[in-house]
Amino acid sequence: MSDSEKLDLILTGVIDLNTRMYRVEEEVAILKADMKEVKEEVAILKADMKEVKEEIAILKADMKEVKEEIAILKADMKEVKEEMAILKADMKEVKEEVTKTNLIIENEIRVNIQRIAEGHLDLARNMNDVIRPNNEMEVLVVRVGVLETEVKYIKKNLHMNVAR
Image 1 (tube, rainbow, N blue to C red):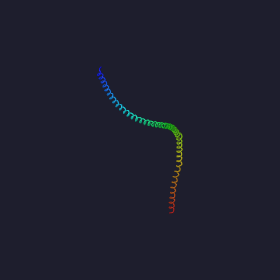
Image 2: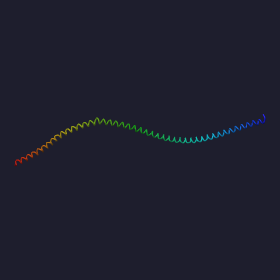
Image 3: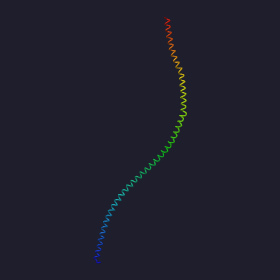
Image 4: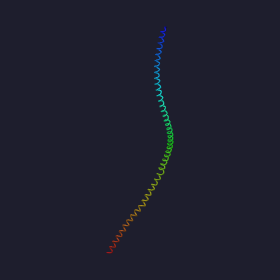
């Protein structure tokens, strides 16, 4: 191979290498642009992640508050259940007392009221028996009064007839 062929071969190799280098530079520029875009996207993702972390922190705080409130509600519910149990027991006692009272009313007081009513009826009859003669006596007093008036009238008329 001659020198000129060698030179041509070297020149072709250099041109080829130059072309490759140019392509590599273009690819590096593209990769740099892509890297820049990736970096921008990563920066955006980091900002988004920061926002997400802040929101998660807020949610955690809210969840902590909710858990505390639930614990308070559970304690309150426990108290309410205990009070309900007490109220149920009290209601049972009240029902028993009402039943006892109803039995006393029905078995004792009602019977005694009937006895009193019967005694009162007897008293009313006795009173009527006492009042009746009293009424008859009043009628007799009125009749005696009328008769006395008539006797006075007759006497007066007799004295007048005798005096004439």
